[in-house]
Image (cartoon, rainbow, N blue to C red; front, side, top):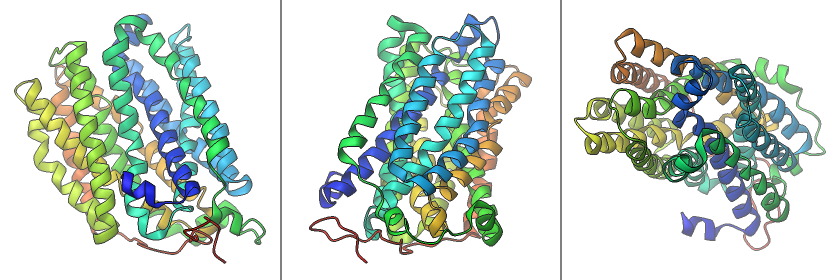
Length: 415
């Protein structure tokens, strides 16, 4: 990874780092909640299943943010839109720690979902449109590992600071990503592809894009629904499973979460880079099939060491599949809607998968608190569906982006 970053021009490197950190810190703010579901429930005299509606609302609101911020990025540019987006989700995260009631907490998590929904698509477009085409697979893996990197940061924070600051302090720490805006101001330039199209005739907007690319749009939405069900189905309630069913301590849960997020980061980096050689669909297929035999040790391991190993391997596979997504979706996107199409389709998939945590909690409660059964059932079904989708799917591996090729000496756009 370091060799790849050194091979890029300063502007290319800045765009990749800003996109990666933006997604890392966004995910950090999101995943704080999964560690404190029980605490929030106790604070507001509720139960874990009810508090999982906060996760549902965040995920359900993300398509709204993807559409709004995506359209803004296609009109005003990726860079300024990304800065506004980061400031907004940071402030809303801090406000969540001040919520006086469960209702206000849920409203703030809904608003946070709008802001969170905008970051991925805008950041991914900025990076993918700036880097050379031959680096997309490896950079895709780097960008997408921002998600487990954020989860890892949340796990470390929970492990190290929860006992000192409590659940409200955990959310207040989430204001720190706002500092990333200073880096973007100083180190990141606008996407060359956006600048190349800045004076071009508008492409017709969202409605025309949907009409002209209906089949592709539907396929990507289905793909992202399966991927989101797989990711959230193996991540969001896993700490609750370790706490409520296996009765592990805070420190044990934190350590296991750290371990499986390291696996997730490695999987995203390796499978993302592999997709540059074997293709996007084939890489996702391999990762999806790898997840299936890992389910027993991940959900039914005998003790913390076995569960940590199973979780490490499971997240290697799951986030391995996700490591392909930034490149895959940007390559499938219409040229003049790349700020909107990847993030919007991604987040519609999130919307369709947004009931996952509540669904799994409901399955667990209906089976006597058996979270292992709920996690394993959803993971197995979704991994099979994902494998079938990519087996018969489409890709545009290596397609050229307008203005994205640059001179290695000065970083200027080629004509």
